[in-house]
Image (tube, rainbow, N blue to C red):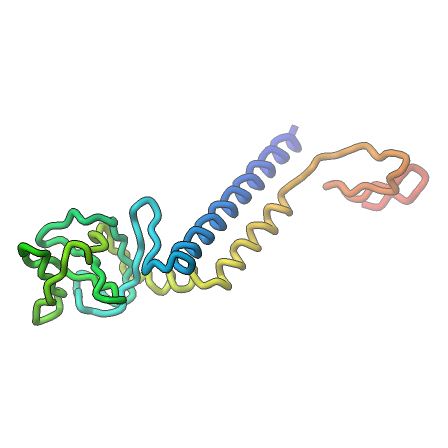
Length: 191
């Protein structure tokens, strides 16, 4: 009875690890295609993207090494913190006024306003700030770490996949089970 529960538990864990591994690989492939093949400046999942902050221009609201979650939208208004493209650079500042052709933005810690930006330059609105998570973001998005996580999940999945017992046939010399190695009758019984 206990073995049936253990067997079911191990099967569930194995399937969950396989699903998690598949999801991680699918996300990695999607991000690779978006950033490298389609040459986008950022990749989005379900109309959200994540950026790491590289300066203190929005301090104390947003500081260096914070992560921000950005809702990709053009529907922004005054006092919203937005991310916009300035050439090849992504900038995150607050909208301080609306003009006929776009917006004027300014970093909270800056003394001067930015130049006017158009609505087309807007990437989206900041919806969540994750303080000091940029270091972890760098660690977990390096290719070596992603490979190690996938490899570990794959190995755990293999370790937890259990095919169940089967009866030794005449052509089998031995079988490996949870209880040990079983030899054909007449041979040694090693446990």
